[in-house]
Length: 67
Image (cartoon, rainbow, N blue to C red):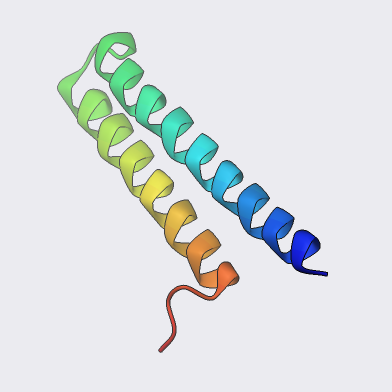
């Protein structure tokens, strides 16, 4: 049973890290892909906030952020 709990935490950390890395690359790519300044900034901050939000909610699902 300990192995299953460890495997669950490991997979949750792996998913969180993957989402954070992908959204970081998307945020950086948005600075080069879009033409207007508004789209560049919107894509950058939107991607960064989505990555942070996903990491926060996955951490909350693991029980790290207790209120």
